Length: 89
Image (cartoon, rainbow, N blue to C red; front, side, top):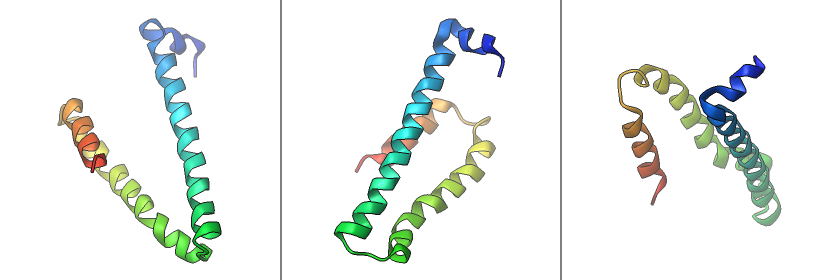
């Protein structure tokens, strides 16, 4: 990556990359704590823990397949709105 990319859009690209890095780090930490919770406090086997985390993996694959197909056809505001609406109970 060229160093000049970090100064694009008056530094907004750098801020976006830092936020993405923190988000990924938080998600990784959460995943470790979820596995520890299932195995330590609920006394589940690693296989049963994997079964509880498996839907997240499957939906990640679905998103990986669908997003490239729709990202150029639908306004990003609607995609973000749909994701946020599905995350709220």
